[in-house]
Amino acid sequence: MTVGRHEDRVHDRSAGFGETLLGGFLDRAHELPAERVGQVVAETAARIGGRDVQILLQDYGQQTLVPLPGEGLKGGRPLPIDGSTAGRCFLTSRPVEVPLADGVRLHVPLLHGGDQAGVLAVTLDTVDDDDRRILCRLAGLTTDMMQTKNRYTDLFFRTRRIEPMSVAAEIQWSLLPPLAMTTPRVAVAGVLEPAYDVAGDSFDYALNGGTLHLAMIDAMGHGLDAATMATVAIGAYRHARRISVELSEIYLFMDRAVAEQFAPDHFVTAQMLRLDTGTGRLQWVNAGHPAPMLIRDHRVVRRLNSPTTLPVGFGGDQPQVSDVALAPGDRILCFTDGLIEEHEAGQEEFGEDRLIDRVHRLDQADRGVRAVARDLSHTLRRARGETTTDDATLVLIEWRGRG
Image 1 (tube, rainbow, N blue to C red):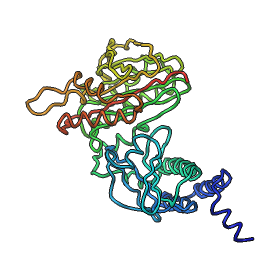
Image 2: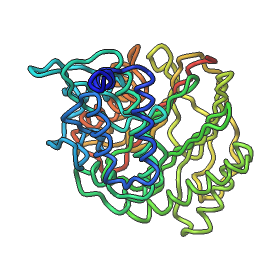
Image 3: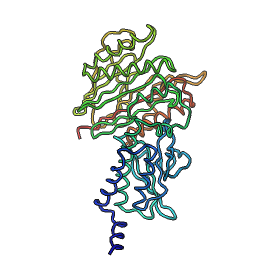
Image 4: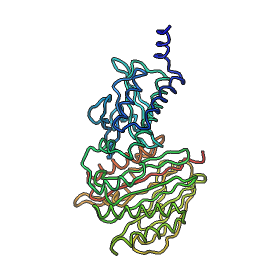
């Protein structure tokens, strides 16, 4: 009788078993030290026959997936995102299975609000739908746990670094929201280059009810001075946004904050946008920043030129608000001038026309904004001969409609 109950427990993959299994995971999560997260994930996977468990985290440059160290976890070298099975799971945000001589290797995306932290990889003797369901839910819980504990540990930061990082970049990365967000109505994705030495570029966004708020900035110079200015500008933007001032008045808050803290010749170019996710109405103001581009049916159909005011810190006039009606599926590309002004010695600037050409090649049907933004940034960097003497940042927004 006892043996029978044991066999039922071993082979049961029902919803009730999954609830018990994952419930035990959650019961241990509250006071679990960060360095033991991987061990508990591996122990949980082992209860359905999983082995060789890996938690693979995206590096800051979005080039590789790095194994998280920890007891019970399989180590190994970083895997390239482009060209690897784990990378395919990462880029598509869908599970990928690979048959092995002794089982099946299952790769499951670690998703957090549309952002892709990495991949959970587990080997099983066989895989059925119950295993897939349980591992997908385990991956979701693992991601949430890492996000929570990330606020008071350096473990995940250190794992994701495959190159030395400058102090300025350290400041900027601590300032950023998640690089990607996906909801039924709107999606956002951003990329910063050079990832390990970025200083003056930054962006911020918030989805409050039916309104997406987004700002992109470029502080003059490089190094700590630029990072400090960017921190002040983003802090002022968040303050103004959170007290619900009008879009054009946000500039005044940011301008005053930068002018009071820095010398008169210091400035920050900026662009602030608001998108009504119910109607698709986009509003924006521009303070010396390159005009965004409207992408419709995977083609750049126009530059969103608008009246502009002086960069933040120069005391310009309150900017005029521009607006445009988006159609479902439209995308807005925002970028800093480092993306188009870079050039090799003796060569002409990269330019907006070449940027548009790359957009037309890469922005294809059924590809999410996160994959397009990453590929676009990396393609542009290669086209510049891997040269990045200035920060080069882009943010891609997609209005998905009223659904």
